[in-house]
Image 1 (tube, rainbow, N blue to C red):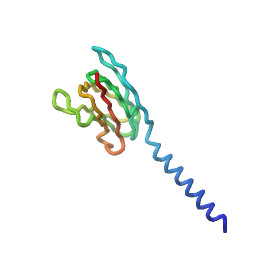
Image 2: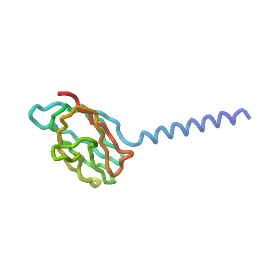
Image 3: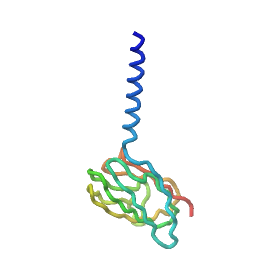
Image 4: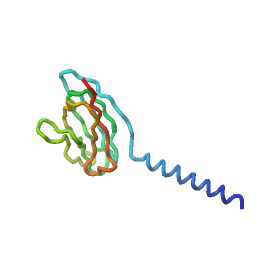
Length: 136
């Protein structure tokens, strides 16, 4: 009967490993720092897959014009929406909803240093990222 606790322990360990692997399956977790382009536009590709952004953390200097190229490599529709920061037109920066296999672009300038969240409005609870705007 000593084997029962060992079997139980092994089964619990396998369940824990499986759960950890499932949590990590939401796609790459990468960060990137945008190289400043004085007086110009820096370009960055943010790949959108099913339930992830890659990169999901972006650092950019305040005032840098940034063009995001947004390919959707997933099967589901996605968009890119910067929360809590409004452009000169009084609206938050966001792309249109992009169907799987399609791509779009958005240009933005964030002048105020801080940490901002971005998300996919179609999957707002699981598809998120951070835009860090540093002092110039």
